[in-house]
Figure (cartoon, rainbow, N blue to C red):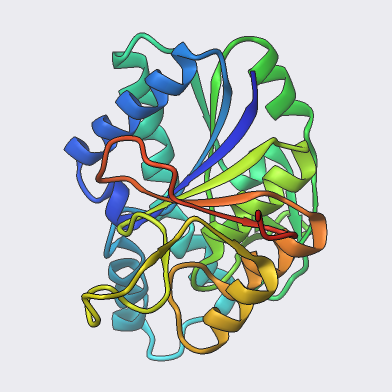
Length: 247
């Protein structure tokens, strides 16, 4: 039985129906005996909406206050996800980045993770809970809420997987893996079963939007096994991103 970190992007949790589908998917993993840490983004479009509100007040919002506002999108998602899992008969507990001790530097709106306190997560897992941790956010040493910048939930998930020594970090998106090129543009694009971190970084530098580049660098540094999967299809193998390419 494995410890798996699963990250769900904004489109995967864009509505209450999609959140319910995530809970059903997690229930299947739990039925196999796996421990699960969920890291969701805000619902699709929500972060932009919140930042838009801030800009209506001030064209150049104070970065500290902007992070206070932007971080609330994920807080809504984690609460809804925990409720959806309760409805599936699962024990689940949600935590903000601050509550689980995701310590960052003080660079508001694009902070970097320095350390993650595992204590509360390990206790909740030991008590049989699915643990739902807000992506994209943490707090600095002074207790200020911080956010990690665009795509920061990927980085949150990888950092949690590294800290917890998870067996795998699964990134659920609106595509079912990593392709040789964008399948929406080139119909002959081929899905890759596996790819190395170096190749993934090269693709990201050329404009591939599947994974945030900082999260791939983080995963490569800490040797976290990454798998890209679709949240809109039933179980597939997706694309595994590892240090060495499988033969």
